[in-house]
Length: 327
Ligand code: NDP
Image (cartoon, rainbow, N blue to C red; front, side, top):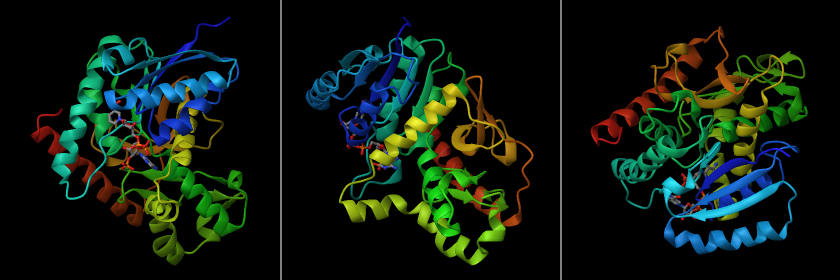
């Protein structure tokens, strides 16, 4: 038997948590041969609901689920964590200024970074889902000086998957015939879904769709999909967000296939003019448990302007949290 992998999930009693935990426990995060031990972290008011979810997890009798522990203390929750999914965050409420939002989240992600630094496993891999995800990841990373910075990532995989579907539908092909799409920048309305290197059924995407569709349909549809789902469902997307979190970690751990790539927000090494240290979305491949930025892609003027605009927003967020003393 293999030692179980410790997976910590914050905001475990929330709606993304509810869509995520059963898939982790069934083996979809780490594969069919890897037992998992779940560590659920909640705020005190969320503990009772997390206990209810744990009862349901028990009732699934998942063969790979080695244990479930519930905490309202970050130090305990991240103790021994091999994988940490940071889902719980302070949502923006009506009338809240951006500074207030960043400050509220700094109060969550700073201490969580410290707890990861203090007690997580040496191989810990962190994915931040809770918004503003890129900057929350930056805050956590800066509070964990002993953990390699590259272990802190933020999720743009849902944006990537949304873009895959939009392009496949427009081109009339199956999603698995679309490759080399990229989400650049911040997981926010400024994100840039780039099709200039994408291939659709073996052809260049730019030969299949025109630029008018790209600008007036594709980019806004991908960027505003979250709002469209709230409008239709009356609740924010949860199952698709959980699915994207599974995809991100699964690829990180098991590797991406071949020369294709996916998108993830990772610490910039300065590639493509993105300031070093920012957590920004790039075209990435995973090899041997590490993300690598796909190098050498030509960036045309259209893409350059879009990438720069999203990166400028990340710089502003970083400067704001610096001013607040959060990093
Ligand atoms: P959800 O589970 O729906 O969402 C959690 C976070 O994921 C939010 O910050 C949300 O951002 C974000 N998110 C990122 N991408 C997406 C996406 N594509 N679609 C939807 N959400 C996305 O929130 P709930 O309110 O249901 O649950 C949150 C839980 O977290 C609660 O149980 C709460 O008690 C807990 N919590 C735990 C903390 C902790 O462990 N320390 C701290 C704070 C909260 P956005 O709001 O922008 O949509």
